[in-house]
Image (tube, rainbow, N blue to C red; front, top):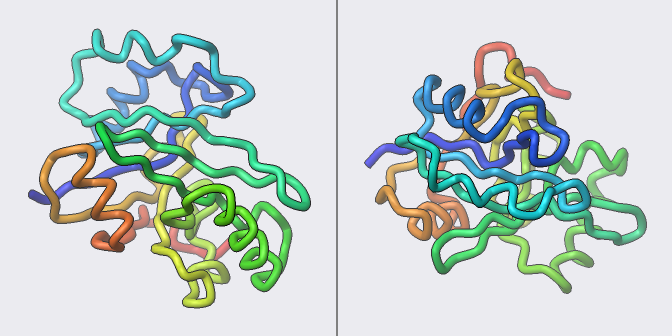
Length: 189
């Protein structure tokens, strides 16, 4: 089955402008099949995702969080929960302000404490070509890191996969997907 998904979505559970219901409506309206709610660890309100089962949506909705990891400064890593599988994505390396060599060093250090599975090749949905390179030995995912309505749907992944949380996570870990960008999100940041 062909699936389209966003792996980095913020809501009013942390610093996003849209509620979970609004996020589901917006992404569902853009033809997405799955999204991952990844609100910030230090802002995430306890129990915020509990009402997810009450929301009427056809989307597969992953829950997770954007963790703050300290390694010679701070970095963000999304932890996305499947039914049995867990996905860890190193977020927006360009925001560190570090050259590629230093980012690779940070990835290696963080990988000693967390099982990294992928790295974002985007910043707020705009492709960052300097980090979409073989020197970073992980699958590179495109995502929009949406915090507001106008940010939703800038970048996403697509795959041919079973409509199942763990199957989606395994496909990402294996690099069995492709990155997609909206028309104005193709430029390099």
